[in-house]
Image (cartoon, rainbow, N blue to C red):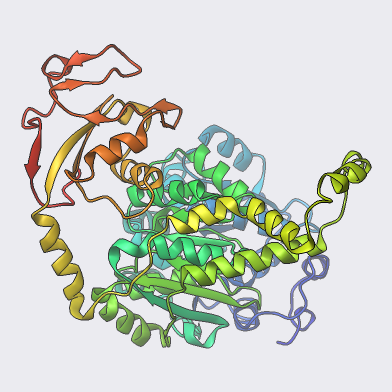
Length: 574
């Protein structure tokens, strides 16, 4: 199959394909469309994310709908609300010239009543997440006894998210005489069991489902000390001004911290994780798809179903534990024939994970040299020069002032004028780079980091108290980031951080305590006066009340906190 006209798709569907600008089918589409159309046999299609699977099953599904049969005839199951909405939009486009072929999306976090009314109004195709779909079936609001096709899209993801029981319940409720189509990037044993229990002699095709190395994605890794991950990330973002990327972190807390620090550095970044409300996630995704956000920092679960075709980079701030998760992540870039870059930031102990991913995905990683601050600085300055050369005078008022501006600068020689112009324009970036730490690769066997940890275990700490805490929106990583941002030069050794409702107790290296307090004097963060002071048994006034003795401030306060100095190992913040 070299073009869509060679298929037995209906004229209406081919017309929609032509209007959508589809010309040459992808390898997935070239194999799956004829297999689905020309046989009633069940199908397993193994293909990585972003290879055109939606059209691969969606076009035959739309083609096969009987307009005269008033019933739901196709059910498509997928792991997330975002993917559910995307698939329903795509199928609606495929069905634009088929009268009465309505597509309804059903998912949690939205009004079930609205979805039930849409089904009653004549839905022929339902796209749903497993939980809401099973709920509607059990309530007899979604009748599935006339189904002709069931599609399990991203089956491995649905199973990884714990939807085994829901999938079993849905499939048990569907007719035995139907065509079942299972699409997946990987084939874990749970997916294989579904194929054994619910599919009839399925035909199986595989299109680079684990062979990510044959795609147009470059796989790079940077080896750095664990404590230098964010510093490297910031340099990489500066090196690639057109970066449009998803940055994967392991925990929700880390997602928030990295996103906030990127925003503080002047980048259009935001967070996406499971602690956010559905409305918040929808808003972030809307802004990311429109390009208002260029850097999306996310957990794996939150990013499932993410469908953005123009990503330039996928960045693994932490490598995933499972190789197949890396394949899913990297598959989000390099789509639609475009080149993509998958970057992994690794420390010494991640080397084994890299080897496992290479074997699983037939990927060859390339170790990239750590960029220097000087390199970033030079590229930023040269980009500035290029932007000045191509700038156009748009402001008529400013144009009218040019004689006065020229007169005001007439005493400067050409070289002096350029120097002053550059110094003024790049001053903020100069401070930013100057305050950054150099990025280092870990020593062999992490011996350097072990020596550093041993040194820090003997640090004497002084306790500081800050008049802000959880109620002001702080997390432990945000407190650490706030201190690092406001204190230039060498990073401060921090010990235990105890976050209260309106207070935060921070242990800092006793030799740096006064410098930290002085640097924070008069500073604001998140709209709060920080009021950081050395803890002497009193606590500073907070926005919610006057200055009090600590023992009277909160019955639930940390009774084990004693004033003054303390020795303990770093990194015990909650």
